Length: 81
Image 1 (spheres, rainbow, N blue to C red):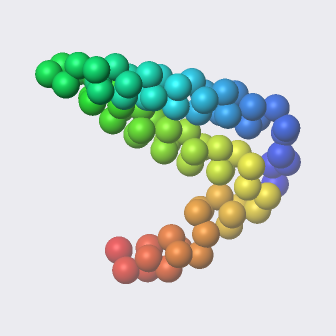
Image 2: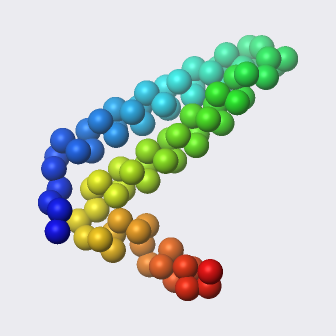
């Protein structure tokens, strides 16, 4: 079983901070320029990237293999697929 390395989650936390700051910056730019269409797309891309990074972070800090699957709700719903 792999053991947790404290340095494994640090780059993910740093990347989550960068993605969140870019999203907030683009959101405030969009509030100033409603007609521009690029800013909402960048915010959406950042939100999706943030969710992916959170998933990787949860897998990196999971103490057991069961904890890496986002809990019992996801295992129960997988039976219906």
